[in-house]
Amino acid sequence: MRLLRNLLLPFVPLYYLITWSRNRLYDWRILKSTEFATPTIVVGNLSVGGTGKSPMVEYMIRLLKDDMHLATLSRGYKRSTSGYRLANENDSAKTIGDEPFQFYSKFNDILVAVDADRVNGIKQLLSNHNKPGLIILDDAFQHRKVKGGLNVLLTSYGDLYSNDILLPTGSLREPRSGAKRADVVVVTKCPDRLKDSERSAIKKSLRLSSSQPLVFSKIVYDSQLLNNHQESFKLSNLREKKVVLVTGIANPEPLVKYIEDQNVILEKHLAYPDHHDFSENELKQLKRLEKDYFLLTTEKDFVRLKDEISSLHYISIRTEFLAEDGKVFDTVIKKYLEEVRKHL
Image (cartoon, rainbow, N blue to C red; front, side, top):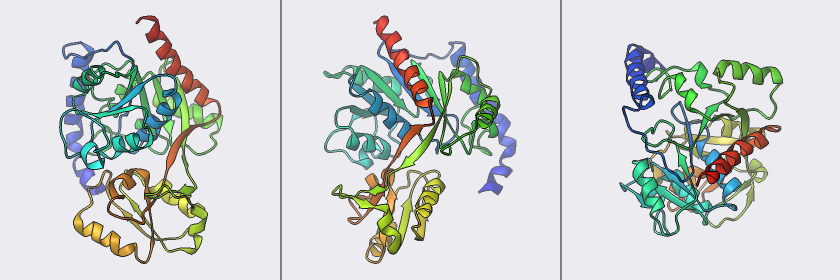
């Protein structure tokens, strides 16, 4: 894969020209961006996957859902349906996508919608009889047809956008200059502790302006495993079992390390691509394995596999901020909402 990407290096300048030109057309207002009076928070990244967008969206849901009626709007990647769809009890990961279905399954007091056309999706949500007071746009940083009220840009600690190059050789969806649109930048998946010198080095590397707050967060794994019946099972109890890990996420290595740090030995790790559609043969293989092994997966993969593999357990994750960074981030979010309310 790396060899193929290197062979495609000559196409990087072309990709740069296309994405740079597109952004300039929006900046110069030649291409139209629609702005809404209702608060909209965009969560996204410059790179392809793996920065922790879903846990960040869930963090904001928990932060705000008790104070206002909110909605999430996603593209609904790899779903079997098309157009606008508001999640309901008949939906599944197949009909609305794995991440939106995860939001819907965990938070029954918010609206969860999908639409590749974010402008239409927002209009549909606002026409709802119980319209939201805030819409969180998942993975929409490059969807510039919508002018987000607040742009939250994520970049992974182990793969900063400042150290990357554009597709198809690198992983960036657009030039690094796109980070200028961010109102706050979050370095995700950090170790538990960061020295001040390392924070400063990262800030210098990202080349942020003085008006762009930079905060640092980490991923926390839950030691309590759950299954279809929401029955709890401690991860430490797996030390005497034969465990097979099944993942279909962009970067499973941090999860593998966490499991091994708990002295749990993985007999196998079946690593599939992000948002993987499991074939009939693959499902049959997993059903054979569940007879002799304890099958463990991620929360995102669980919502796609739970109806097929009865004994499957998942380990959930959440975003936590380092030190006082959580207060800084929460203040940015709440200050934006207060400013919007003043002008409504």
